[in-house]
Length: 91
Image 1: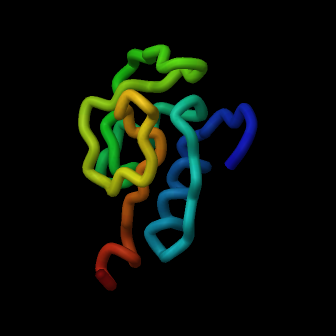
Image 2: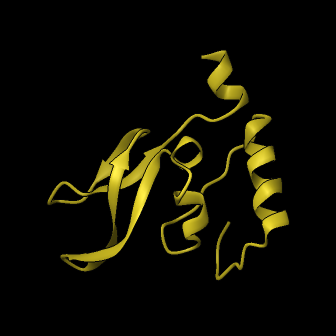
């Protein structure tokens, strides 16, 4: 999902169901905090705060449950992969 998307409840529910059934969803921290309020889904619990790390503005994370794939030079998680739904049960 790219761009400035406004997630309705129906769209959020449909995307979660898609992932639950085995689909892959890639979202970023600027798109919608709703997904980050559900650590079981996103793999993170995001803070409302942002920090500057070199040239990047990065959302702070209160908790990381998923696998950290990439970090900034100062160690802040940039990419987190998380299994949810169908993929979780087959692991």
